[in-house]
Amino acid sequence: MVTGQDKRAEGRAHVFLTATIYDARGSEPVRIRNLSARGALVEGIRLPATGSFVRLVRGALLAAGRVAWNGTKVVGINFDKPVDADAWIRPVHHAGQQRVDEIVAAMRLNEPVPHELESDIGSSLSTISAALDELCGRLADLPDSSLALGEELVRLDAIAHSLRLATGRTH
Image (cartoon, rainbow, N blue to C red; front, side):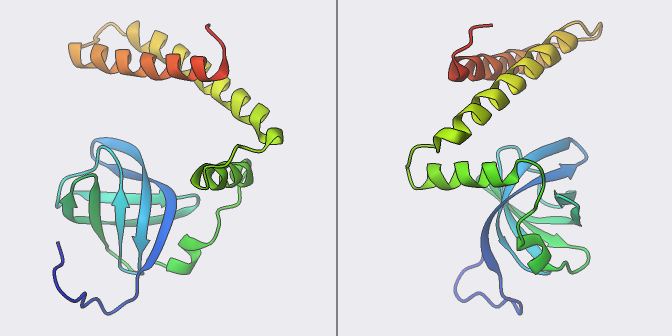
């Protein structure tokens, strides 16, 4: 943790960007909270340990590096090579991104989601719920299932159930 004056040579952009972090354990969705050409502060739930080699991916952009420090639900990453921070900050344009941005903006302002987006949300949640149900079934049928996998399947099923409730569907 940095105390006192921050002596970094490069400025950091304070952002709220979605990305995926990859390490030896797999991948996790994360939020980039600040970013410079040489590193990032990343927030998430299951983050890699200090010293872990990681890849941070946002759309077509990729940055590789090591976890410099690990805090409560945050890690600091030092990139192996400088990145174009402006490219990372630019909006990622892909199918559905504008709808996601509008929904997030409404939620941040504690405003209702625009009516024209509600059907998209319900449809997306239904699709996600169905896909999770299918995945749970396939994983449960694996011959070498462990107790840990069973516990994770129960969590995954609970998420799928929550999505079904959110969409007003019970199956």
